[in-house]
Image 1 (tube, rainbow, N blue to C red):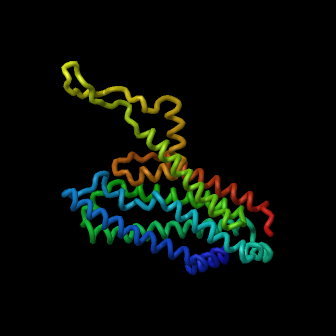
Image 2: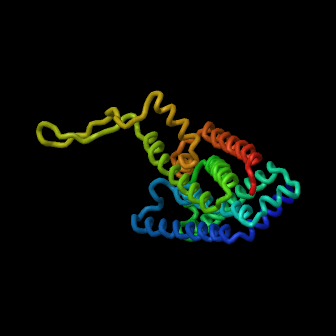
Image 3: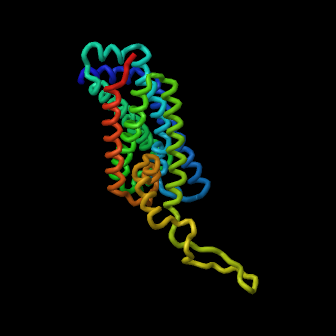
Length: 280
């Protein structure tokens, strides 16, 4: 196992796509805070609406797309040059091969997360000032949630890449899956954010305008449907990423456990199926 991890780590360090992702995330962080400075100066305020967590953890909204490209390319190389078959022929257990790939892919994701975070610290201080960092709350929950989101993505994308020896097809499938995550998030997260009561402006008999408050919101999701939505919300990594960037989010231990649980299941299923895969 240690030899497999070492070999994968060396390959990761030499991977061009890994360093391309690093440069992209670093550049995006600088760009994001530069735009934040422009917005602050334009609005004449000291804080962006929604809080600074939107910028500091913004990569969580799209890092799954980066992983959907890196993971199948990283794993696909082993199929393309025959390394996967050679590892098995020299006596390495398939379980160890699978877990070594998952661990290094997860490490790559964590490094990318830390890269964006570290550059964000310097970008925030340079463009905005200390208030952009000191005003963020619940950082332990946000960091822990981010790491579990990355683990869930790694488990899912590694499963696909390890079972499909066609690198191009794996990339396409994973990118499509990334789009599905976004589509589900835009629907379920938005529905759950609808308030139970709302307000509206109506016209009075005299022709004036009057504000009616505490009106039942037709879009509010209640009952069994809400329970189902909340469970789906807890299992969807992209949904949880929305809470990570929301400065006023209330974090759920259930969601963290769901992410950890689904990651474990996908990894276990991947180990089982890879153990029965026909390696050509």
